[in-house]
Image 1: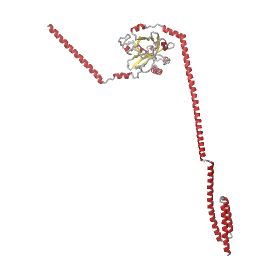
Image 2: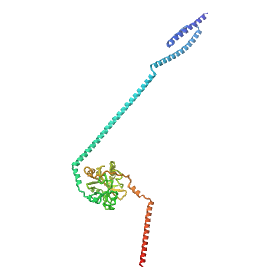
Image 3: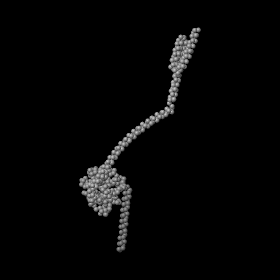
Image 4: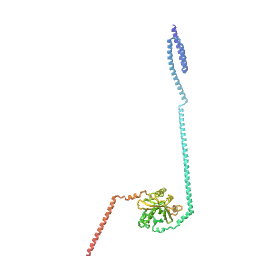
Length: 457
């Protein structure tokens, strides 16, 4: 009876304790730490209550405690998860309250815009620095150009001052007297009489120490007319000394060329071959050109063989660069010979006046030429010629493409054998025809003689 009563008492006690534990847990549901403490206290009470119970009760009690612990653990985990979810939700809600999406987007847009503006500002600053650097470079370059321009202007001013000084000196110095004497000196040539006989005579050439002492002519028609005609226009194997209309007759061109035959008796330009000898060149260095108004003096500085191609047909001597190239070529050719005056050549410039005497030398592809430079009168010959009214007006010169003389000659000689045979056949036919005519004439004479004889009888 006591056992049964004790057993019922234990069950009731356990029920009451369990109810209290559940109430405690429910009360501290939102407080995990407190619930755990209450549970631990409840378990402690239960453990104390069942100590006096029998083994079966203790076993049952331990089983129930284990089940409760599992249940409580599961509840605790779910409670914690729920609590965390609630906390996350609360934080999210608070965040959503604090930051409006549009505001956040505007803020992000502003930040992006600010970054873009900062980047653009940096780019502008970099561009400005680059522009400033370029501007500084341009200013430096401009200062350099201005300096060069100033130097050029100063040079020009100096040159003008020198020209002015020279001009003033011409008008007031001994050089004016020299020009006056040159103009007043009577020419040894009677140009009035010569031109009355042949208007193509315009000047006269004389080289002391040689037989060269001839009039110079220029045809208004065939430019090679005086190659086979004398000074009066008569046919002659000697020809004349002449120039072509590619040159002015006032000798103000940079290069004036005169032509003449190389005769065996040293007449015409036959005396030029004497200048092969340096000793002859040293003794006879001067050439005189007589014009009706003035006498020009040239000094020889080179004598050598050149190509037969005309030196003036293939370049425009009015061009400064062309004149410089010509002087370079003269230097290249002349320094190979002993008949080259280096010292005199070094005084020649693109503004000098050069006289070239051309003659044949037995080789159809080459010519022998003698070059001389004009001793300029004070102020220069061109200026003086203009002052005297001798300067010819500008001319349009037709520049001919360069073709080697040898190639042109070979082309002319390039006849085929058939053409030659045809020419020979034609010549033979002409001879046969002439022979037939002679025979016919002989037969007629014989017939006439018979008739005369018959009449006499």
